[in-house]
Each structure stands twice: as structure tokens, then as C-alpha cells.
Image (cartoon, rainbow, N blue to C red; front, side, top):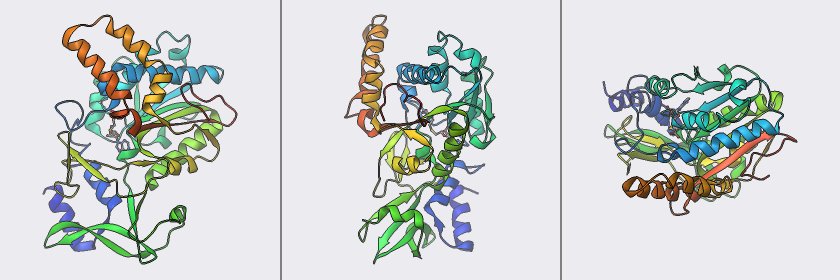
Length: 352
Ligand code: SAH
């Protein structure tokens, strides 16, 4: 049975489902889920991410985390963790770029938090030789200081959507009309998590990401207890407003309900909600990706790499630099929010 048929049968039997439940099923259904069944990245896939665009991204992120480790006294044993590592490219670039940082590789143990078996296999191939291990959830990662990176992870966690309607909030749901999946609104609900949106007017839609806040609360507990840092990179804004659920397939936007499990479903990250879920840590200012990478020296690195290139590879390299940093490309839409223990220096490239 296709995922669409399975979801229709479920709704026919138990009634409409929340957008979050729908998103969760589409992305991670064990049999048909988007991530469970494929490697969606790269030119031939559905979308490209920053680490897949250029090695410079992972190199600079790696040096940023290694500097954070040194700034906290170079603890002798740490976990270097990545949430949602995709093809493993970012971690491979981080590890290669930090080989020369004295003591860093001896101190670290790499743990990848990945839900998809297909992508774990891919990560294993990319990272052979580094002794990486996998965890289903951050809770299963060994305790101790943790330096963590998550690129385009939070946007893939399910969101609940609520619409303001006649002075009350109603949850947006996926139901059936003439046996086709369709959006609708549930009955009035009252949730304290919606109090942040007191300024909302009738017709406004807001998104809550309970799974993202839970991950952030776990990061908060770990870093507050044992030290470390978290670097969260994603698209979104400080305080998001509006329907940002989007489906992407073959590098183009699609209808989120049209083909469940066949398109990537994401929504913008509400960084304020993440910061509020980590009250014991100091967070950076929300910083555009272009600014962050420039401060870390991407232009110098790009020039050094360019010296070895010519022709088509050189044009691709120049385009990749632009794509990562330019305001019209990923430079402004993507943002960085970092977390360190209270009193610790902020990671380089960012400010409090
Ligand atoms: N960071 C990578 C991939 C981003 S795509 C890159 O930048 O290229 C999202 C990643 O998160 C995929 O690896 C996906 O399988 C994983 N993922 C999605 N939901 C997850 C969950 N609930 N738990 C763990 N991993 C998850």
C-alpha cells in the first residue's frame, strides 16, 4: 500500500491528523518515508545543502568548533556530535580540517544522530576510518562535554500549525475531502506555548515545533552540566509568523499533500523558540550565514583553493562561494544560532 493510501485509510478510520503527524509520517515512515527510503541530496537528488555545495562550509564549521573546544580549556574527552548528518559530508570536512589542531582528534569521539538507515549506510561510507557511532536520539549519546552541529536538521522536524480564527486558535489538520488529502482546521484549543503570539490577528498562522524544543532542552541540560557548544544552522527567523510548510522535489517546490513520502517537507525554524528551550545557556545573536562565513575567513580560503583551479572547476568554485554567502542566495536566508555554557567565550564568528 502506498503512503497516500495508508494515510487516507488512517484518516478515514481515526479522523484528521495534525500537520506535525503528517510531516512525521511523510519523512520517516519506516517503509515509505522520504528520508528512510533514499539519499535526497546533490544535483541528481531533490535539494542541495551547504556542505554539499563546497568543502569550505565544513572546514570553517570545524575550525569554529575546535576553537570553541580550546576556549573551554581543551577538555581531554568530548563527544563531537552531529544531528541529521545527511551524507556525512559536513562531518568529513570538519574532521579533515581539524586534523592539525593539536589534541583535538585524540579528545573526540564522533557520534551521529540519524533516523534513516539508508543515510546511515551512506554516512558509514563517507566516514570510514573515523570510528564513528550512531544514536537514534540525542538522549542516547554518551554523557560529558559535547560539541554539536546541526545543519538543516531542525527544519525537518515536524511542526504543528495553528490559525487564529475569531479570537481563538485552531490547529491546522490534514483530513479527507472526496477521498483526497486536504487541509482543514480543528476545534478551538488553548495552549500556553501559543502565548508568545499574543499579537496575532484573525487569519494569522503560527508554527510550533515540540520535537525541536525537546532536542534543544536536551542540548541545554548536557552543555549546562558538562560544557561544550552547539552550532545550529538553518533557514528561518527569530520569531516566525505564517505558513512556511514547504515541499521540495527535484529542486522545485511541490504541493505538500500531493505525493506523501516523495517530497522533502520542511518548515522555517523559529530560533526564538529554540533559545527559550535552552534557558541555562548563553546564545549568540542570530547571525546570517554569509556574515558568519565571512568572519571566519571564507574569502581567504576561497582564494587559496582557487589558486589550484582553472576553467570550469574554477567557475564552479566561485559560484559555490557566492551561493554560500551572497544575500540573494543562502547568505541571508540561512542563519546561525550558537549556544555555549554561561560565562564561556562565544564561538568565533558570532557575538552575544
Ligand atoms: N545535515 C545534512 C542533511 C540535512 S537533511 C546536510 O546539511 O546535508 C536532514 C537530516 O536529518 C537527514 O539526515 C535526515 O535523515 C535526518 N533526520 C530527519 N529527522 C530526524 C530525526 N527525527 N532524528 C534524526 N535524524 C533525522
